[in-house]
Length: 238
Image (cartoon, one colour):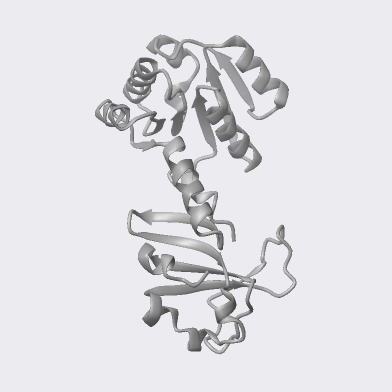
């Protein structure tokens, strides 16, 4: 179980096998790299020739095209209307980002995900048709703050502002107790989804036991995945 990949990619359609990423800066490259590594076909687009060439050299996209995304005809010629999902990863150039988002949506792309650099920028992107807006810098800042104040939480997926799924180290205070004895639901308002298997390695694909028995004993320092209210998560012993 790996919940980190759910943060951004949860909004990308699982049935889709082709993605276009417009803007090949650090964020755009990271999206290309991840999607390509997951086996999807990715086309990268940027107005900068060197960025396009680097994506092809690094082999993090099946195709890469240099074009001006503020020109609707260039997007049509590149085949953008044929894509089910397009990620606008421009971000720092607000006018270019907004015009590109509008162009892509008017081209008939059903699912447009756009990166925003501010709250106002995000509102404008929604106004011109973005189906989902992401704030990578804000999300990274929040994640850093949580990791510094709650080092036992290894991974977090926010369901909404008040509820999350987290991968957390089993507190030493829970060591040797059964799941029933700990009673996360009544004491913290949380539901235990999974616990790590003994001697499981980090890269094991099935290192977790899903929906473990209530009589299972917890081991301090091992991992558990819980879902529930953020306030309850914050109350877990360190």
